[in-house]
Length: 604
Image (cartoon, rainbow, N blue to C red; front, side, top):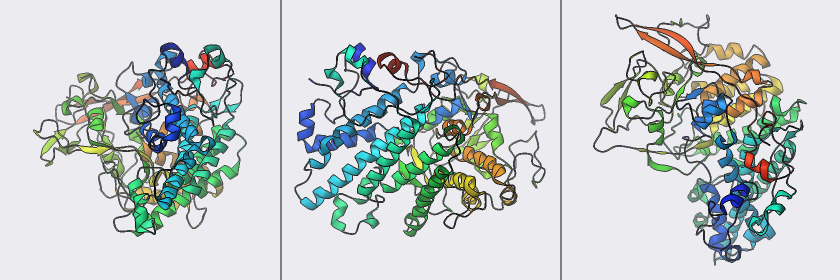
């Protein structure tokens, strides 16, 4: 029985353990290529299976755990692969990103087989010609969209400066490759090289543009003119890639390509494209999704427990009745695993209640080091659990829990291996109604918001500021106006955001560079634990010194009178050997001509 494997992601495993580890990309996992090419169900399954390759939550090494390789968080397990990346002791066998290389190329294989010789367009899916055409066009557009999606993921993770000094992307494979027909020597002699970074960008943008030609602008019932067409189009396709998502991908690609690490020549047109496409998505959410009842609105908070949250541009399929985030973030005292904790650096990134940075003398609130969590930015309280924080848990909200992160307290780092090492625990993404001590445990759905409106606002603000400064207007919107939406909107808990914001007024007059640093902090606050900060700090940085900084935690002492004193200590030193992730070691061993990223010379 033939098996289908990816040329890059699967090579060494194919050689070592045959192909049994890798399932066919088809729904039944038992059909050969001839069957797939002749079966409309299997052909459609090529596309459907690609969505199963995408993460469904934040509890993995490309989600919240990835922040543990930044100054935002620390992994509780010292032997975890992400921890080892952060302290510079990763070995080839510990590579936590190999699985994503394999996964993405599996998806690309599926798509390439669908696109090859227009197989997907030549297949008859439905008897009715009109509906068949609608479905064929949608699937054809999705194929290009998915290839763009997987290549963007690969480029973001593995693109970088090679040991040859060139800025490289990943191998661009646009044809399905039958690895099972090659012997080991043929595999080693395949002429596969990493494309340049620019070539990868252009391929992604090209695929996005091709996808947009065939896909609906968005999967919404109210955008479908003929009600009968809702059999194929509309909200039944929610969770599949669409036109507005591909526009958002273009904005993100250009934003990264415009950033200092990937734009040494300072090409301004990249910033212009990032701003243009981000603004298009922003407007769609405001004017189209915002025009319907219960649609998107700037004054609505983001609800990570709602797979249909109006702020979503593209999200994963959801896991219903799920407890992963609560188990991951809660401490031992709440029957969680405390798998990671926020750093003091992230906590300090949240300013005061009137928007000024922490301890800024212009703030009307004086920062008290003995009461460090009072009068803070409202967003802080919906993201971090800290010493003394009391929350209501359980379905009825009638069970109180107080965090005790002081020395000897039940939630202190050293008290249990299931407590965070940082003496902070994480509130973002968790459902407080879940309490495992109840006879009937209430759980909520969880999914991953890959792209949301807030990400586009941040992209626009950064790009537009680089073009003309904080008050530069692009199509009626300035960076200052855009970022004010995020600072004033309700928090994840639904509490009011910043009611007045004098600091925003002042920093917007301080010039492009000052506003850029301000925007970086806003991005940090808004996207923490979503798995994006790791790539953000790298695209901005120009030296390893920007990344190799120690992170801290509080040491909290409870005094006899019940008050607390706070000292701070280094919890982890960061020793990154490279600003880039390594090309998987197994690929370096088995394919001649691959160039490794700088800093990983021993992995080749």
